[in-house]
Length: 470
Ligand code: ADP
Image (cartoon, rainbow, N blue to C red; front, side, top):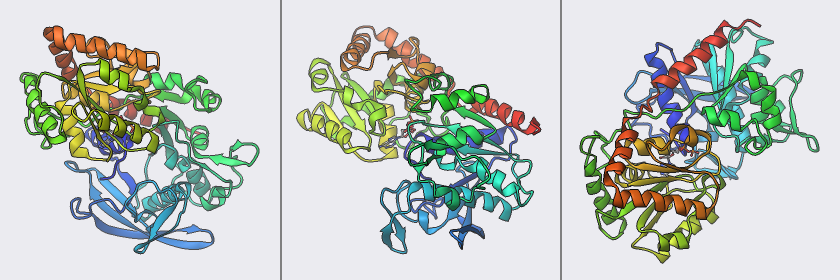
């Protein structure tokens, strides 16, 4: 319904897997202007209000269900979210016009507060609030603050999931008043000099349990090199910190019935990928050749993701084509655009968001590249394996947990030279040892990346929380 990266996938898939375990999981999200109201049959079910800056701010509660499920989704409707973008940088929609920004920290603390108020309006008393990333990190504080005046959430516990430590939600201290957190609670000043509040820090320290999205990342973030400045904070919660690997929505990501791809296929007829490859080469204006290796890359284009490791030298030296799909920071977008301009028959750079094209790339590519500096879990390598595309990844976080020599290739040192070497090795196998290549593809396709196991792990954490008495 609304997505820029992996959190969108998780919010759409984990609740469905929890429902199968008989948990009454319900999703709360902002009613972004980009949500297709008629496609998802969104209906207004209630309205409520929160008190912000001495004023009552009304919002609507709209309802739908996650596609192909009975999981309820509540959308919080307020002008803060009317624009087409999920994150704002500098401006928001007011009526039909853009006006001065409320910052994202204000938008998401408003959202968190409204979601809790909506529970009350709907008379839905959750055992566990499962808060996702910095955006909802103040949930535990807000719940405790409310418990001072009313008992609605008195039994509610909070699990806080860190999806990416790189984005922390930093705000001036005024946010505490805006978010209606009790001044009696310790608010951790992340920056001693100007007293800034860091939502991520607050979530880590005040939630009942904390987890992140792969076992490896849960260990890495305890150390300075991957802790994004919060390793000391995380070490304080070490015994309450878990790592649970994300899954993927295996109904949606299924090459056997994916409606976005021209030629559907399974493990038995994975050779049909070649037809998808030629179709994509044609669509994107690359040389049409079913035998040349096609390397896919689908990613947000930010510092984390390693797109700058792909160099002109590499392109000159390697016998393969590259298809890039992504948006993000201008410098990374420009780098890929430049490469595509120089090698138009070998490189295609698609600098936009397009879910359908992403599917076509998974289905068409032979190799799927994920060279991240760090990667909390990473979904694209799992989706790629499901589509018989062999992952070449950097050995970090969830990439390290999900890829081994039986399904793909890994490299350690973050450098172009090392990446080129590992790509050359993969290409050697592709061109000269087809039997081994097929084995890699089939092993990847056989792997179970469904949410079933991880949902059971989450259930265990929820049960642990519910059993806790304070
Ligand atoms: P992150 O959450 O850090 O962005 P993940 O690997 O966890 O990375 O998830 C990325 C998800 O977003 C995948 O489903 C991927 O296909 C999708 N995605 C990223 N960029 C684009 C894009 N430009 N167009 C379509 N899908 C994209």
